[in-house]
Length: 127
Image (cartoon, rainbow, N blue to C red; front, side, top):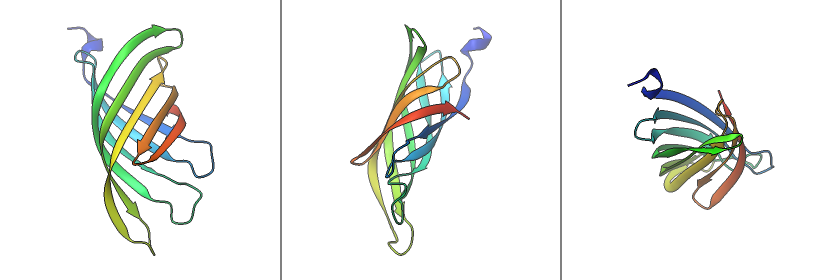
């Protein structure tokens, strides 16, 4: 087993650049031997709207090396999100959550995430 085979943690920031978009922080444990991902997401959807909902999600998925130019790693995770509304519209509901990304060696690239019916194309950067 080499040093590069050890489990490691990575934190990614997904940021949409459109009004009404979303953003999130995705914290992942990466197992390079089994090519698995496990983690948590926290973010907001419908940004720039009154009382933007926030969400938290637990997720699991897979990652693969590509060998395609600058995109050296792709990954996808799925899970359930708890979506909460700030006052005056107080409440929480469960919704499907998913995220996928294509990144370079520094974990920077492009990705999307979906909470319920809301899907956001984002820039992805390691934080």
